[in-house]
Length: 323
Image (tube, rainbow, N blue to C red; front, side, top):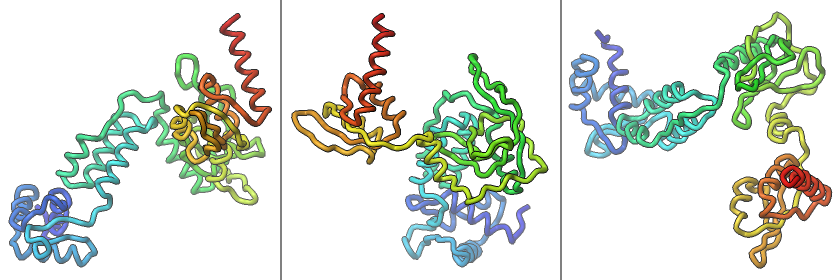
């Protein structure tokens, strides 16, 4: 039996689940839902009092005097468009298994009315194939964050993939590290840390760690502080390489592909006779990979040392395929 003091929560849950701007609910319908779902008998005046009490707590509820139709909950943590975005992000994630993905999406959809939820369920996509994952990933993240908050070192076993696509312990085995921050970058979770037997900061894929044990040893102090965002930019996104500027000439037809790949780091310098001269800011490895993938569609103009490097790589490929 639900206590009298808890009935205000029942009213709130009914408004949250069965009302939105396109689906108003009358006081009489609220009474029916209270009886059917919670076995609570409530007079109309009590419903009005509970709604007024919810409003006094800062919850935005539109009522009959506003629209002449009924009540609906305006104040929600997320808008439907935001939930759609979050659901799509969860569904597309390579680090979340399909079963877990469906559970998280279900919880997100429950923040909306049943009517909005039905629309979301028709459009949410959960892909079936996921990359091979270390099942301990989220446990690892929790353990590392506890160690970071406690200022303790951890012992970890490093893993790598063998030829059968199985994660196995690598040659370094178990090492001790000072963990400083967990980071999400380039589609993976990383731990920013310093090995106990080293002097430099480094990072490890958290899904490549196993058997994390919090040690009773304080982390090594890093003088000058740590900026995880700057570190990720330099050593994960840029892979420790220095950004450079390149000029390439290509057909107009692949400009869209260049814009999609490099974004605002690509600028058109000249466009004439269906040929485009483009300036691109990128790290060498990414630029080289793109050029080699589109070698028959573009030409490196500058810098000369990069043009020479591409020429050498093409000649080496030629020797392999035409020997």
